[in-house]
Length: 581
Image (tube, rainbow, N blue to C red; front, side, top):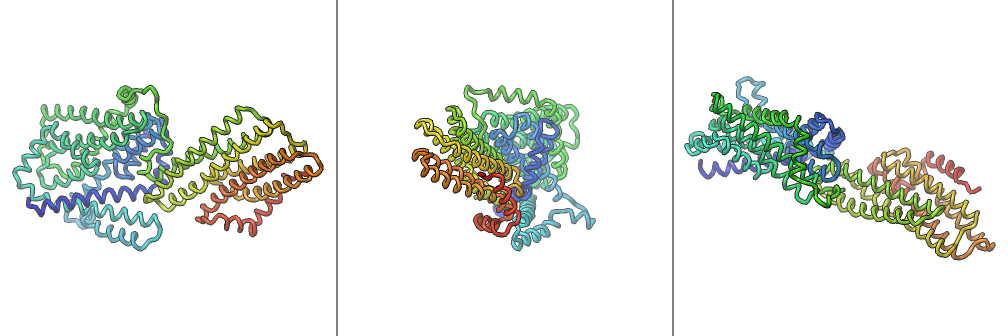
């Protein structure tokens, strides 16, 4: 093997790994909503979890990436350790899909239709179709489809380059002796583990093994232990990803390692016993690409069949290996590991934003209730909620910016933009809640009270704001456009109410029915309630805008107020409902 063949092999390996990465990332973006659906099916049911892991890994073509995703889920509290065990088992089976695709290169027949199944026959067609999709389509999904096809074509071209470069090794005695060494099962396991740990992908290392198999020097007796070792080596990625995670995430990574080590050790022992007693002749036969794919799948299925009934014992084992610390870390609200799967990361952002929305709305409602009946506990609770809302805005803003900088689908980009616009409004609502509490406390300290007429008016305005808060929260959480469209007319009524209440206060002041100090607090209350309704309008307007792929909020609201018949109908209803007379 001369220097040029070595360079060709390295070039082929580079293209192979790049194509696999490119295809996996595009598949992930293209199937983003499907990943969310698969995640939603997670239950404590072993079979459901198993097939979820299998499905996710089959989509993104990497058990390492799937397991890192699982570690992120557990670290974020999205998944329990029990669920993670079943998903990891499924991921080990799902990763075998790549080997089956690569095995098509080993098809050898004179039949035309069989020849068409060979990658060398259909890869150029896929590459041509892929470049058309990528260069001439503006739609993001179609572009991703093009990248998937191009990634697969690059992967297969790299595979052929590797196979062609190493084919001459079949006559090299040193190469033959190397694989004679790997007939020692322990050395084979070690070689497979090291190779996979270096490139951090069992799918890729199996592909390299298949490329070497074209030399005819890789026997089944050498290939099977190498495949067993590859399952152990692929755990490196998950173990690295668990650094700095909470104890349950570390346990999830340890599940991956324990599952593969126990399965490999058990079946390696069975393999060694069978080889020593029966010495099947097929172990000395050259392994084919198809045979390696079968061995890879069969080994992972056997490991799963062995460990699935023992998942409870596996959970107990990792709990012992990673014991509870004195101070347990809470789940990470937004785990950076999830950024590797943008659709799942965005789903997590939606969940955290929903928590923030509930907290902010609850804070404002408690602030309103403090106007009627104040207690120090209410004041403390409102301030705590405002601190939580500030925290959520900080982490969500940073996370969404990081997420938006990645290659994500058009739909995900739009959703991220919506969340970035909305979280600021929810945070400001919580600020107004604290302002309401401050006003109440000032009244108690200065022994200020409102007139009965003012209290009655404030009750009407508070009821209108309460309804606006409810409508806003529902429209955001359920993405309900019909409800969102009812918020703007209500906020306009609230704005008019505020002006009426301000005017009525001036009249009472002129008649001597109210004091200047009470007037200052009254003005602050009205301003805070009106601005709260303004933030409700922004949130509901953003929900409507994003549905229409429009980001010009003020233009949308102006058009609604001028041309929408539903807007004017709802406005009249709210005017009557919250009339002061």
